Length: 180
Image 1 (cartoon, rainbow, N blue to C red):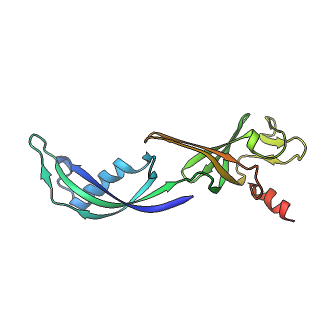
Image 2: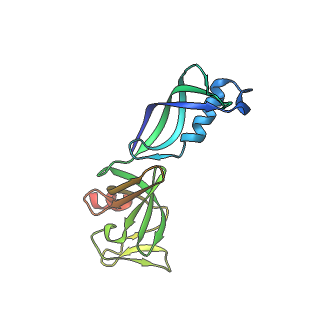
Image 3: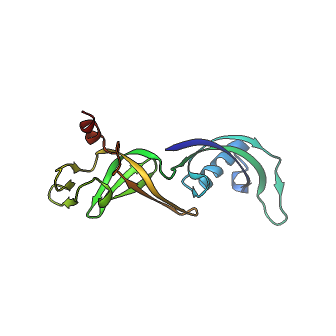
């Protein structure tokens, strides 16, 4: 998973209600409210605002009481990449597959992509189970998977499709067993 620090530029409007705060604090708060949690096709997901590097002089627009400042700041972002191998935790099971938490996202591991075996959902045991191998996958299991589909729709949502049907991928326990 690619976590990185990126440097961004924006113009931040400081409303009059924040004029009593130190300028750096007001700008930092506004940047956090504006950017944290935002998904962007090019950047990925903004996890945190790290630092405000530069604050330009304030400008006031006619008829608007806010003060506007050009700022340069650093943000921590997460951007999954197509074909990237990731490790995560199974957080939910359904009849059609497992949801795996990878960083701030959940990826879908469809039943057809869990293993090279017919996989079905066992409601009683709350596991995905291979018919011949008898291997099971349950909530809390750690897995290694490859990102095979990735779709980021503007700033709203991201969809991640995963597979474990390749050598070196699967439940970490299975990988260790296969290496013996």
